[in-house]
Each structure stands twice: as C-alpha cells, then as structure tokens.
Length: 443
Image (cartoon, rainbow, N blue to C red; front, side, top):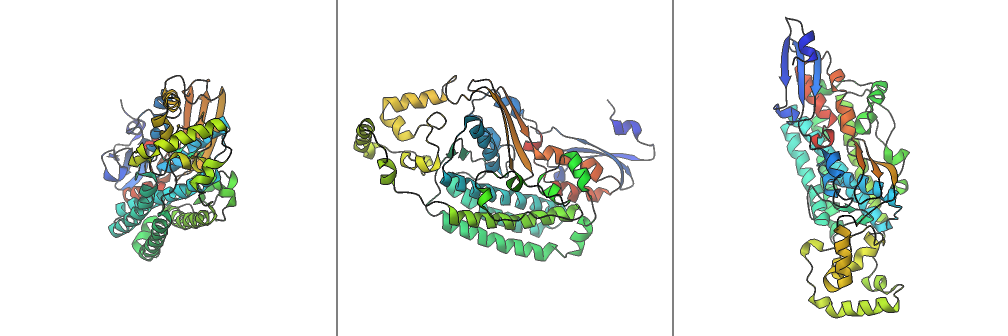
C-alpha cells in the first residue's frame, strides 16, 4: 500500500529509505525521505522494529517478577528504569525505604545517567566521523561499568534496585573504584572538549542544524536533555524531588538555540553535575552499622531462640557468591523491613521450615505482593527525560494495567519536523543527538 509520501511525491523527486538496516538507524527506525538531490523535501518516520510488547508482558507477570523487564527498556541506563518502577510500587504500597538504600540508589542512578550520555555522544560523534571520540567515551564508560558491576554483579541488565530498597549493600571497596571512575571520566571529558568544542567540522555539522524552539519541544512532549537544550528549565529531580535529591546541590544545564550542538553540550555539562551529585552522596551516605547492633535491637524471647538456632547452624550455610552483600544482617539498612514486599532472606529459607514456606508463598501465583485496588503514577528523571510508570491494581498479584511514559517516543516524534529542509548528511547527527533507545521507544 503506498505511503503518504509516495502519493504526494513529485515525479522529479526521489524517494529513499534510510533504515532500518542503515547503521545510524540502529536497526529500529525507518525514515522515508523525499529528496530533491540531497535536499530533504519531505519525510515520514516509521517505528516499531524492536517492539516486544513490554506493557502486555508486564500485565501477565507478578509485581516482583516483572522487574527484569524494566532493565530492557533503556538498556544503557537500566538502573534508572528499575528506580522508576520500584518507586511507583513503593508509592502504592506506602513503603519507607532506609536512608542508606536511598543514597545507594542515587549513586547508581547518576552512574547510569553518565553511562547513558557517554553512549549517546559516542554514537553521535562516531556517526559524524569522529571515531576517536567514540573510543574515548567508551573507555570512560568502562570505568563507570566497573563500579556498577562491582556493586550489582552485572554490567547492563542489573535488576539491582528492588521494591523496598536495593538487592545488596555496596561493595566494601566501592569508594576506591568509584573515585577512580570519576577521575578517569573527568579526564576523558576534558579531552573530548578539546577535540570537539571548537572543531570546525563538528561545529558545521551541529551548529544551527535541526533547531527546535521551546514551544515546539513542549508541544511534542519533550523532556530531559533535549528539552533543556531549548532553554526550558524542567528536571524532575528539581521540580518534583524524589529520594534524596532535595538534599543535593546541583545545577540544571540549559541550552540556547535547541540545535544539535546544544544537545551535545547539555549532556556534557550534565555528566559533570552527575559526578557532583555522586560525590555529595558518598559524603552523606550513612555508615553501615555493625551486624551485632542490628541483630540485637528489639529481639523478643521467641526471636532470641530462633537467633540462637541460626547461630548454631551458621557455619553450615554456604550462600551463593551471587548473594554477597545481601545477607540477612544487612537487610535493615538496604531494605524496608516489611516482610510483605521484600524477598525473605536466604538464611531463613535454608534453615527453617517457616522461612522456606514464606519464601515459597512470596513467589507463588496468587500470593506475594498484592497492592490494594487503585491506580498510581510516578516519574523519575531518566537518561532521556521524564520516565513515568502508570499502574492500575485490581488487588491481585499482577497489574491490571501498566503503562510506561517513555521519553524517547515524544522526542523521536519530532524528527520529521527537525530534518525538514536540511540535507541527508544532517539526518545522522540530528538523529544521534536525540539518543533514540529502541527498547524504550517500541514498548
């Protein structure tokens, strides 16, 4: 069936498909271009090449088991996807998260934001011909991922931030690894600025190209770095502070023209602010209490008997290395002590019939987490903008409806208007500056 452009195209103009197999389209976008030589007369955008039915899948999974699916939305900054979902659930369940866990969440989220921006600008630079910049930025991302891997046990799909807190406490050596990552990342960003900020070729390909006005950005529903590149001051961390962001001192970088260069510069400046937030969180995070202090508070006689039994069998328990940092004695500082919403500790599961039954019922269909009937919406500042979850509960252990407010969808929607009257070569940096993430776009 002919498309709109095929019907409207003049005989002397050429129709050209850019994508989905084009390398710069990442295999997930198809742009039908109507060209007069290399000049773009008209365009039509087609998405959906990476559609996995995320929302429908989640409606057939329990509230706990759907968490790994959020990792696959924005696979460059999965920890922020986890955070958005679990905070939506915590709002519905009215759960209070321990202070230490909240600071850990901030550190992990800002590391993910840096990783997201590094990946975006690396791809944008490479596709514009600056391959050296790509290598530099990927090297910096490796340092960031070293910290994430050390803490979560994975580099990309982590499923680390859980309902009620986090999966495990920070690695004992996290400060050393984190400080090295921030130091090396700052060095790389300095080198990148030297390579690109005043580079005539890069400026010619980004300055005054794909300009978006504040009014146009708002009408399309833009948020995040792309919206802020137009000069609009909107950051969920500032406008609607969540977690511990109200205790952090940081700035919101803004652009002036809303062109490709501003979108590059805003992300560069945001990485500096993210590192500033991480350093503040490292200073303010509560020190972990000793195990003896945690276990000794408020123990009743029956609990004392259970504890003594546990101590007798403690030497016989060999937990999996994957559980390091999430032992029972660490639960009070990384998870809300609401047994209804968190996974029972493995020490109890392995040593008592009550713990085994409790663990079994947590994952059993029809049991586990069952929020009250109602609906809830909560959003966080993702790598690309406002990332919101809307959940409707019918009182069962599965969501009746789960909708994702994905920032990518609104941003990519404006691409047709952005490349109008530009050239084929301008499509590449313009598309790269939007940071399209297929898993988030095609949900």
